[in-house]
Length: 70
Image 1 (cartoon, helix red, strand yellow):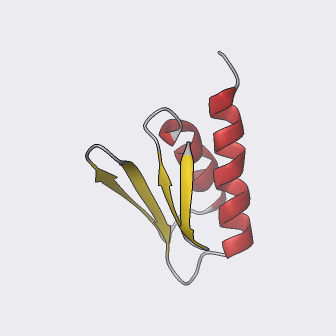
Image 2: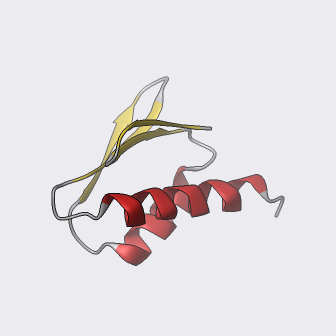
């Protein structure tokens, strides 16, 4: 569903991106960018101001939300 590329970068599939975006934006108001990669998903990247552990926790929380049927 998601592929971590580094401690502040992850490629997120289309199904999970709304949930991951909600979680990440809830924890970071600045420092995160979203880049659509057609056919691959969305690259979510945090800059140097983003704590890597909190970033990973937010992404994983979003992934868990995406797995739960609505």
